[in-house]
Image 1 (cartoon, rainbow, N blue to C red):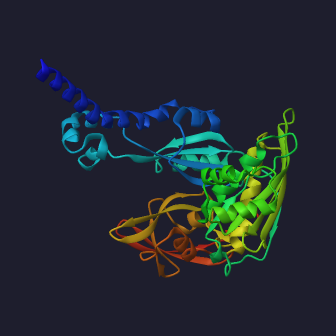
Image 2: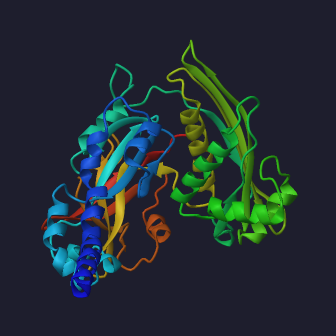
Image 3: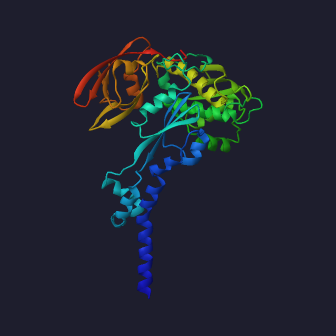
Amino acid sequence: MRSILSGAIMLLVWMLMSGCGVGYALIKSEAKLDRLAVPMTKAQVLDHIGHPDRVLKDDGRVLVWEYSLTTRKQWWYELAYCPLSMWVGGCLVYPITNFLSDQREQPQHVVLIDNELCAWGVPTAIAQRRRACVAVGAPSGGGGSWARPEPVVSGRGPIDRDTIGRYQTMAVMLFDDAAGAQGTGSRVAGIVTTLMLDLDVHMVERAQLDDVLREQVIQLTHADDANALKIGKLVGAQAVIVGEVQQWERHEQERTNSVSLALRMIDVETGLLLFSGQGHLTDPTNDNPESSARLIIHRILTQFGTQAGLLGSGRIGVYWELQEEQGGRFYLVRELRGGLPAEKAGLKVGDRVVACNGEPLSGIKTEREAKGLCRVEAGKVLQLDVRRAEQVLDVYVTAEKRPGL
């Protein structure tokens, strides 16, 4: 009897350990994308499929999220490999079977325009649909330009490409809320953090800030600069970003909104103002103030990024990812924006860019280094060394001026 009971317990343990791969594959299956439908808001997308594994783009209007998902039939492979999974570690080393089959997790992209779902699927399959999404709302005269008004922004301060290296880590404090719009400061602070990460600046995580605030018994909302600098030092930041949302109004009947905000970047050791920016937008094209706030912040931080040497003043209209293969790094072209310089110059989705202006990417160590090599000023030519299948090409792209500059 005892041996039978022991055998049953062992069988149950075996099923639980080996079965975790099956459960994981079901939870992470690309089938979850079947829950998506148009129209759907950003909040609804998050409710249906959860938070993304990576935010690939957030430029004030276009959001691109990446989810790493298994194929629909992956759970069958996991079920078939259950005995092997058990013997080599089961849950402890999952997904071990990924090394034995070609059913590994693959990236799936979800594209939102102005916080509205537009397209989803594997990156190469939705390239055309994403361009169509971006073109929605373009003037009837064509040209692919967006009819949404540009915010009025300004940014200035002494920080530049010679001094930006002193500020490897920054922290964003909660912004002051707009009158009658509770929570807007927190939302704006989150947008600032995301866009600063896009500039390859290391940002202190919100949870770490909250822990320090509790220990110091300091309220982040409406905290003065002295407290902000104190918190910045405690979390290891060299600079803090503080600010306020001055206006956040939605006009339901007219379907318009008005947003204004300001931010300041301060050296935590000296209290020196490094950069300040402010912006305002009254947008008649939608009734979503958060989209307007994101656009304002994007334009302000574009000015900061170009001034600090983190961005060139020119853009070529390409979305590429830094990848590594056989010890060498390169940019893989994922997407091209229609009508912009890269597409006009003949660059294609799937191209591998191995050098910019004759400088190879193979030996670079960080994303910031790669961006520095491929940075270009408005009106200047960027030479790209491209590998396309068996071909070796030189592509010359003349950059256009970034919006907001």
